[in-house]
Amino acid sequence: MTKTRPVFAAFDQGQIPQIAVFNQATTPLGVDLDALVAALQKFVTDCVAPVWGTPARLARTTGFKKNAWAVVFLDTADQARALAYHELTPDGFPLSKVFVKTIAGAGASLTVATSHELVEMLVDPAINMLTTGPDLKSAYAYEAADPVEDDSLGFKVNGFNMTDFIYPSYFEIFRKPNSTKFDYRGKVSRPFQILAGGYQIVFKNGKWTELTASVAKQRVLQHEDRREHRSEERKLPPDRRRRSKPRPSRG
Image (cartoon, rainbow, N blue to C red; front, top):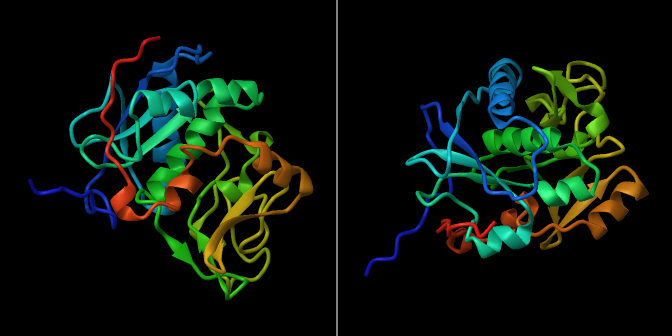
């Protein structure tokens, strides 16, 4: 039997991807999912796509949709593993997981976290983009929301808080401070700046690490459950990234 492998270079080039959004969490979301999906669509269309050139069509579904990307709400990383939600959809397309119980336990915003995952999936769907930066011995991950990660920086779309996110200019080291806009909220003043609540994933000396701008954020990362996180998936070689084979939830 021939072993099939997913493609890890680009997805839906020249097309507008469809993204299925569905809930498998037993923990209450605390928001109306249809209304949230509508707000996320507006966030993508009005805020993200004009900057990054990454339009998408979101739809609420009851599960994976054929040939569509996906955002799934789950309770925890343990539930994701128990139900066989892996790194990709069953068709091999990008999959973002939002852990509702974990987010609630941290006192964080579910809608900010969801928009965070969404914008990062749109900008780097294969979780493999890197660039050079201030440290020429490091490779910097193209994560569009990590450097400005902070619920307090969120902004309203249809009444829901959405994440701040960086612009392509953020990764252009030749830019002078305050010479252009580096993030949506205008809080970043120079390339590769990390705000107090943010961090930057880098590859240096043969290993991945996180750069932060505060000791407090470093402590958060050290104690945070990083399983099933994009930063962990980035560490996986292509042939170890698995397609989901979802099993029915017991919840």
